[in-house]
Length: 124
Image (cartoon, rainbow, N blue to C red; front, side):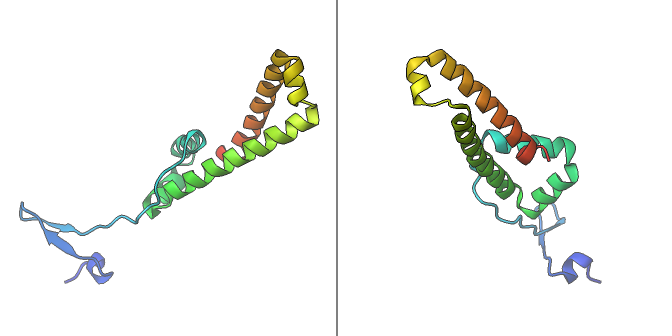
């Protein structure tokens, strides 16, 4: 009698120890290139959305998801920082005239933009 695995097209290989082992092939994943935001998303999924994490992992789509999230987060950060700096008048003129004010303003802008990105893309 065939097992469900065999009826679905699965095969077994005889191991050196005399046991039969299923021939399992994991789906191919794309190369990981994610960085900070991808790692943060992965940690969040593992801790708070374990079902989704397991589903992505078992379907071979976890790396693709993390790469996508990381790329989107970086693009969104660049856009937000640029827009917020323009709205607040933080430009090259301020950088030349008062470097410390420019650094402080850019740090505030970066932190605000990152909070937005984290809530929109990482922790949902």
